[in-house]
Image (cartoon, each protein chain N blue to C red):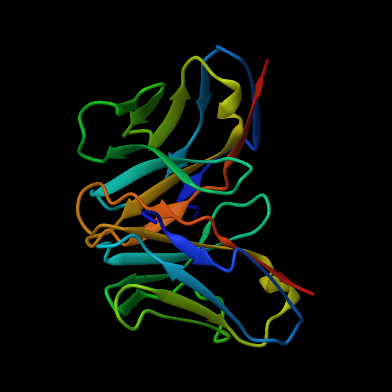
Length: 114
Length: 115
């Protein structure tokens, strides 16, 4: 497809489990962002990649959260020892480096931690 | 301090009327971009309109226009001739910085269009 693809669309897990969320950005987009959106809130910045490297990971809430983008395309957000407070929609977005730089979003991965 | 402030949690507008959604921003960087996104109940974020800090004229895209008042640091979205399909959450966002990688969102405004 032409848009940003995120899998899974829904994930239900138990407290303490490990979770991986995947994002496949628009082809050719070098910038990739992860956001977390809780109900009724705006997207909260987690991490930004430019190419393969994490250019800014200041939004990751703690060391249970980690993200990789090994080949500069697909990215995986990894959450260890999940907690109920991690329940949210995790949004991935990509953009070109030039121009207006608007973000193109995927449909999100809804994570529910029981 | 909040980078983006949206003070209207919810708004109602009559179909075919115009509506203004408020947004104020905070930055000391002279180079920044302002964006509005729409998020229907389906959850996907849809880009609506962009305004650059150096743009002299207010941005327009179809029924959407951005009322950019730089001195007041406001970037209000105006939707003309509201349609039922405009009912959604609307987020104001700002991108700033030398490398433009910081991208902040407001808390959103829920717009309900009444028939």
